[in-house]
Image 1 (cartoon, rainbow, N blue to C red):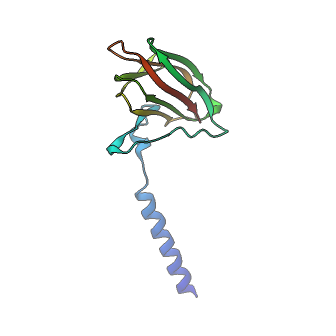
Image 2 (image 1 turned 180 degrees about the vertical axis):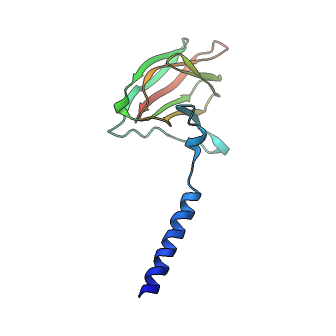
Image 3 (image 1 turned 90 degrees about the horizontal axis):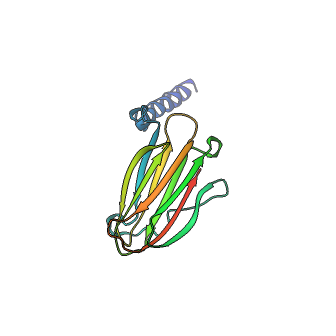
Length: 159
């Protein structure tokens, strides 16, 4: 009985040590940057993502689903609250005829620009890697360089 118990405990210990050694430690590499921003390609490898915006009852909608049509660029401002979560998704689908550019600023700091070709969609993902949650003032600006008409679907949520 003692041998079976010893072998079982040894096996459990070896499995837990090996799982720990292969754990994802990407947060350590990003410890100096408190917010991580990534993007989900809407049409990666020829497959179209129909909808990456799954909204659950606990999500806070920062940009309600908007269908932006016309000549003027899209601009929106919102403030995130710490109690609403540590992730933010900004989803944009470009139904227009030309490439658009999605720019996001957080508390005045530029978090880069994303190119969204005509007929494609992308989701910008933000996550608080160090700390409890996302907070601050966000500015979303979507524009094109050729003056063509816009036809965009935009939404954002914090969770």
